[in-house]
Image (tube, rainbow, N blue to C red; front, side, top):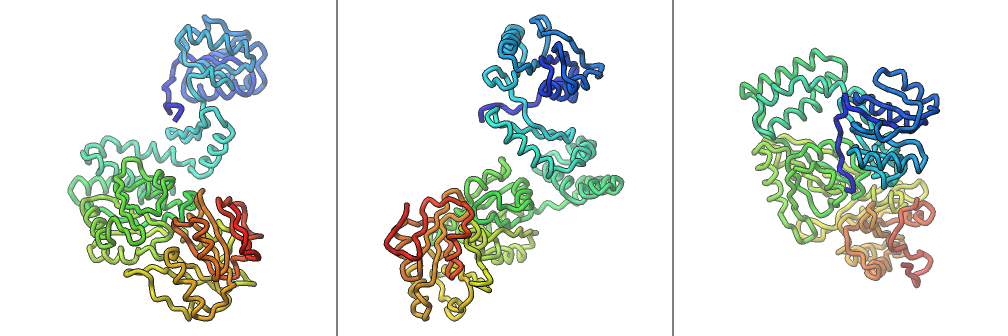
Length: 478
């Protein structure tokens, strides 16, 4: 982080803006919205700036500023686009002890003026450190579109209960839980729907229940599918729960980019789950979730892909239900769908596959006895999870059950991630090609004629290793 994010209180303080065009007008508008007294200097202000000059707290001087004008200012903005004028202004701010920001001159700035989303009293600031302001404006536009305008009013509404909440909940964790449940629960929904009276009544009732000891002290468990690896594939609900969890149990399929989205002060517990090398057994994981929830924690079980597709989520909620622990399940994009899409391989296609069967090659006691009668049916795609270590056995099984060994195969390592690699071949030679490529990471195996479509449908995800041409088994491109 190159700059310290900070909000300055400038209400009633002197702010100087030197310049007469659009940039100066925006600076004046920003300073006045925060309650500052603004002095503007420029002999010939544009019409846009002149529109700001009717404010009684804005004083316009139709001349260039002097050092005496800068004296006593808390913040000084230079927006003249005249190098000599800007440099002179900046030197005065050094001599007078003011905070300075000279437009398009990073070396003459004590602070960055960020792009903002204003939902007062909620303000979101976005900065690129002056390196790429356009990216900051793009991000601001995205936030603008997802943050309802009513959130500012919601903040003011719930703020009136602050003192009572602090008195009712002396503990930090219980207090935070109440705030989050109030804002994201029924009371918040009622207020955003325009029913302030019922929202108030709900909060009053919740506070009364908490004061009398009726509030629920047992925590909850959230089984959240994190998708195959790209953080952009997370659902909004997954992100919301990741920001509310007290404790996070995660395995090796959860990358650092996704883990970074979890609330910073949440306790993180690595539970392993690598093939044949489990840091914690499934039974231990389930027992840990029950114990943590009974201690009053909101427990996030963060799983790669989807919890209910070879993620053992069903086993975990059986344990939770038996223990009387409340839980939620948030679906995630499963590896077959994500890896296929990012590799340019559709799982179904009218001319190639009218169905897709998903199987895992890894069971409770190692390699499963697969239902080969199902896997060898024509007109389908077979998506095999956790099959890399059993690739020789898998190709041998297809051969033993009469499948044409020229059937195309793709092995997608670290699918959807920046280090994704794709190797394609046929059932006859895919094992050799995978070994030559050094594929060892989490991989999805796709079997079927849809793999041939990759050459034309791959939409631009770069592979560190390019697949070998199906027409030639003699060339491997790095």
